[in-house]
Length: 257
Ligand code: NAP
Image (cartoon, rainbow, N blue to C red; front, side, top):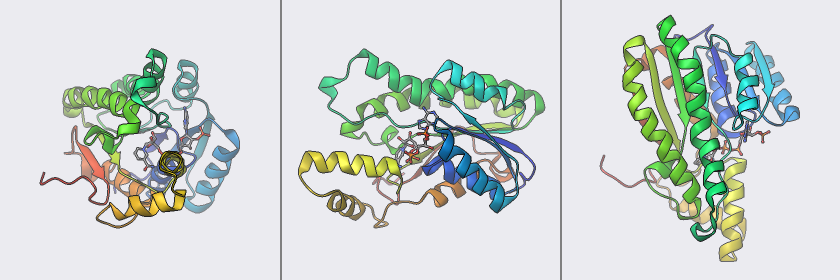
């Protein structure tokens, strides 16, 4: 991939899709700054990645949605070449119940955290003439998900921001793109399947089987195939990919273009 020896910050990377991205970059010889809130799982993930791939992995146990958390993360991330922005998704619910605080929390987590980290890291990447940003967003920016209106709203804001700034920095060798997961087999999806089971009265397994059946690929995606796509987007080969929204959903979004 041409990125051996580069350094990457992976936010929210101890589990799930963030971990998939961390592993795929480590497999390319990229050194990591790995973040999540829970220190125990974070340290375990970091140790496994060091052991398997032999790269340096430093850890920052911090909440990326807070100013203090981002300051702690950035203190360990000086001069990073690659940033994968990620955070936990907002809770599902009914749009009638969401108040201002719920929208602000979703914006903080799924828009502003990524915006703030781009503001902090992209200028340095531009000065050095190379950089890669991948923001993990969601299929919900193309196809709204009813119970995830907070996600639909916050991620649309980040998508609009990226559309503008990616064109502003491309001249400096810095690419900014979004990677959109459809349904992937992670804890997040277990939580959403459980939520839907509570609404419909089905078992969680029945919900998962029904949702897999609605995907042309017939299954949920995996964190490792998600990570492999992320690694390509961070690679030397992806230098002409600017401001794109790359959807990984097994064909679930039905469209010609
Ligand atoms: P996951 O399996 O639940 O993993 C979430 C990871 O993020 C964990 O490592 C978690 O560790 C960390 N994290 C959560 N909140 C954090 C915070 N405030 N600060 C730092 N780290 C945090 O979730 P996932 O499936 O990988 O999803 C990742 C993102 O993709 C989410 O925003 C999700 O909504 C979105 N997404 C996922 C899917 C899917 O099918 N999986 C589909 C569409 C969108 P700690 O809890 O220890 O912090």
